[in-house]
Length: 80
Image (tube, rainbow, N blue to C red; front, side):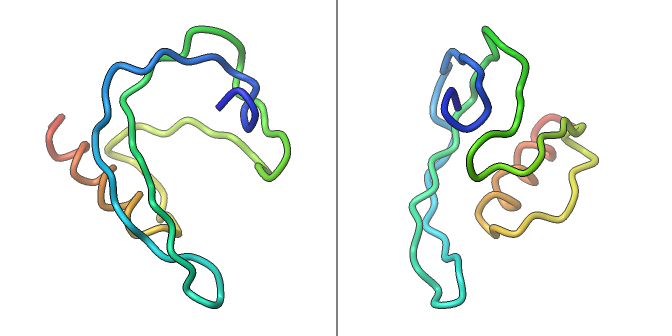
C-alpha cells in the first residue's frame, strides 16, 4: 500500500485468501485480504492506480474481481 497509495498501514490479521482470474487471457491471481489500519499518510493514487475513494461497507460499487466482491460482501453481511 505504501507503493500504490503512499500510505502506511498496520496489519491486524488475514481475512481471506482466494484465487481469481484477470485479463483477456484469464491469468490467475492469488488475492490476499487483510484487516488493516491506516497509520500514516492520505491515500493518493500512484503508479497503476487511477483513483482512490472510500465507501461504506454496505454501499460498495460493483467490482471487477469476483474474489474481492465476494470477500467484501461477506464482511458487509457479518457487520450488519
